[in-house]
Image (cartoon, rainbow, N blue to C red):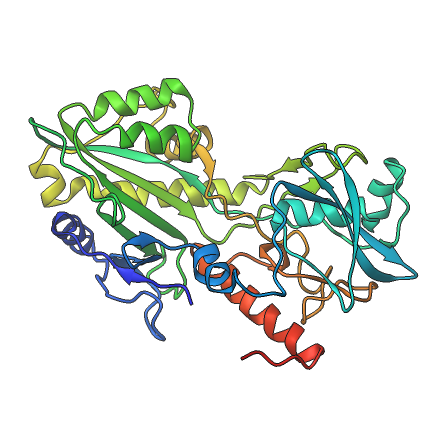
Length: 393
């Protein structure tokens, strides 16, 4: 349903050659049966001249169905559970009105790895000690909200060739920048990657550099201003190395029993020190691209953020990893299969309640999770149709 395609760019040729010089394979399909490592121009969710989303791909064709109702500006505040069975949900509209909607077969919760555990805990499904502390009657004592995982990142910006003149126009019907992706294992005998890097080639003097720095990765004005200054009359190579297999785990807790309060998100990033050491090694490994022929030919320079300037070698990169730490927004695992839901995504100890989103992943995958979450939804739909013997045209 979701259209994907590869967007090739002549601007990537020299960059891919630089990574090949370091011994990395350049491949067309990193997801094939026998290739898990290397650099490529990635698949993007593009189709019919627009950036595709699951809303466009799935809800768009279904929007005229009589059995589909989408309530916008409406928030689910509680799953209604009676005698161990989910019977419906309580909702609040934007005007503050509260309603109860009742299910004829089951309740499907798909609010993501932060809000799905929040809603379950508000409904009495979660760690007993935590729910007791907030005066929430416990319906099922399950480790909801635990096991939060993500992909840790640290942006590395490299100044490339000097260019003067007008900023190149952006094609609104394509991904706006040349992009490459790499999957790298530090141990060459290893078959799975330690880190992924997403690399964007940003034209000189482009406001995109500020937009990505501030809006996507949420760095401080001080850092982003330094990045923007580095892009004046210079192409920049905006690289996002991120750690794929992390041991650190965080948790989601309720701030109160008030559904309008945001939950407390403890990322747990680098709570396992081995993750920080590995990330330092990954950053140092990536930075070796500065020594390749092409990068030397354009006088490529690592942009100085002013952080960790008193350190060198691997200590610098471990310090940099911590100081520039950020999120890939790949939150997962907080209603994990095995501990919270079973292998058909049904919540344990509760009948008629299923969770279908990234929260059910017991562990992270080695890459972006968009495709994985879509697959979970497809599989969840199959479970639901099979359970109720429903046929779909």
